[in-house]
Length: 296
Image 1 (cartoon, rainbow, N blue to C red):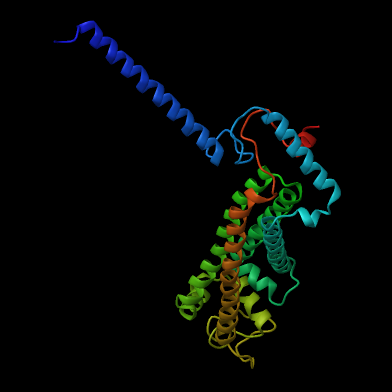
Image 2 (image 1 turned 180 degrees about the vertical axis):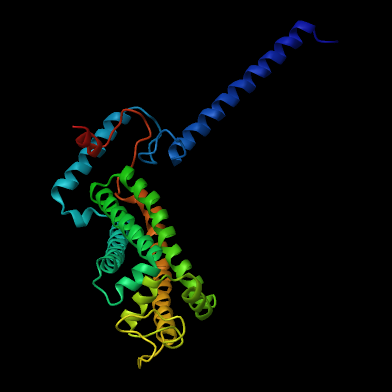
């Protein structure tokens, strides 16, 4: 005997309703499971909670506990390892940027030997070093403010500013290395003969105490200290040695800063988001006690 057509539709709809109910129950269980293990993107305070009831109360209690910790414990006991690494890297950046600033400013003000020669023929290296050191010092100060205030916005700017510092320091090494290794002796002779002005030749002769290039009769600029019959050597040997030593010192120091700068950049990228040990609420309206203090 065949079943009635209406009865068949009723049975089918009942089965469909049971399947829909099972799917809703399973989806509810999966969402509850995700919430329990901490996969819910809108709720990340603690992983053991399975419901959102009382979230504001728990959040305020959590912030009150942290505020009490900040009042009772000394600051160094509340600092995380990431914060100490950030502090070390920022102080390291401040130290070698300050050293680079002192050296470049010393050459500009003429406090070093042959400063006028360096400033005349390597002005680009001096000014790039000065720019990199200034940006490095300012970046370190921004980072220190972000570290002590535990402010992620300041630390984000600190991360961005480290990239131009890296580029400026690296460019100094590249320019000096390329000039020192690309037929330096031939370039210096060609520049002396075809490019240098009278004042530039006199500047080299007076500072290095020489006359002419190969000897006093070979493209020498004559004055009271340099004339054809004087017993002074040519500038070729002294000038080559001085240029080679100066450029080698520049690219060695610049490339030595590269691993230090990479350490500072990697530390800033990895540790900026862990500057404190506080958990963050992903729900609007729930602010930490630090954010409330900053707004007040």
